[in-house]
Image (tube, rainbow, N blue to C red):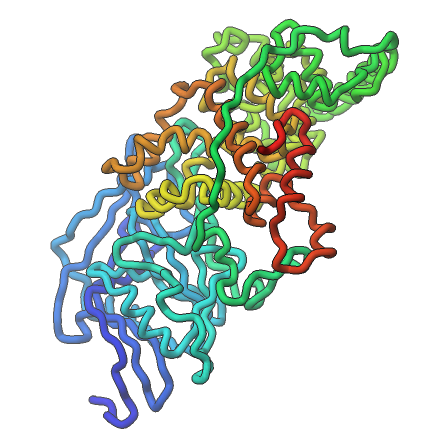
Length: 620
């Protein structure tokens, strides 16, 4: 039956919009072709999708199949919670059978625009962009793929009825608000939400770009994608951190996205010699006279192998810097007793008890599996029945008793093995690991908020340093920097040689010139590859492959020089954006209370921040 012409008005229509059914109980993923429309029914605007069969037409559905077996590199399941062991490259094949009209019609929907909560650009395993709509009830509709383009036209038509406002917590999420008919602000051209070519200038990162399967840690392949944040859990429109200066009203949240940063020349930086004298820094009772000086030596050149064990115990908090030799003897005895008290807790658990303790049983299983494949090329851990493997296992099990809430997470064995190699002592390696985990424990927490934050901070830095590289990565749907996940998670453990990691970590443990120096190292690596990436025929998958193949091919000293030069270049910028200042630790929230909201940067702030690290030359 046809609708009354007076009550129905077609505003927009686009054919070739595929709806993905996301059937979780099947090994097939069906994509149904159809129409998307904006209509008015009795004056009420709505967004609708209907399959082609409803129009009396027919088109083959596109089916995606998951390849079975360990060697499979395909998957088609678009469920954000799905965690298969497959690579991101997937095969797409046409199936000769059609989806029946009865089956496809059940997916049709009509959503009043007053009930639209958000639109989000998402990217799933096939390397395509999808538009995901969420209602105010917090329920996401099936993803839509515009096979023949037309997303900009749809958003332009929607702009007649709603305002799209970028979420303050997710750069790919846009919140929808009914438009005030008298409001002429926010022109559509400013949004640049999603264009047909796949280039996305507005968003600088995907909120959930996690890419790692610890069982095959040499590949960045497995993506974890969280469901859309429900309305009640999201920040209200225009919400801001009260501790930060307010953003300009005309372009909220676009400080680093819409404008570049004018940087001065990058200075030349040289590396120094390793710290090879220790007693010279001690007073007669064994106290370290100037631990900041020691940190500067370590940052500049690392530590000589003969001193590494002793200095590491200070850098990782095993000994306080101001402790005497006698105090350190007592500290060692106390820590030894405490360690073995914790060790006996898990050693004394009977098999029957462990059967009723699923957490401990799970931790033990993960540890045993990881220990057998951690740094086996190193003579300290090679071969069967190696005492080094036993120590690795026992220290990790004891750490579970020390921090049972966190327990063991895959990847932690990578953090312990260099420490155990240097100390070659069970007790000392355990307490040094606890000091290291004080810096990195948030990386392993289930929420992974720390990893999200670091990836965002990395995108902020890279945009300030190299907007062209950022735009290229965005154009290949790699602007999330998800391929850097492994770098940040375990501090480049798999990217450099074992010996280089010893130097890199001790440099990072100094926390000089800033706490986020590891992000500057990531920037230096990415910039070193810009010539290979920009202007090439790389796509999302080959970018992942190229980055993963950098393992053991990077020169550490060059990367450290470049990273420090980047820091000095940014510090000397007189108009450094607030977000970059925050990442580098140059922004003091307390000082902002005495300034106007517009004074987000200032030459005095930069000079004071640069002077905080005495080894950093003054800006010209």
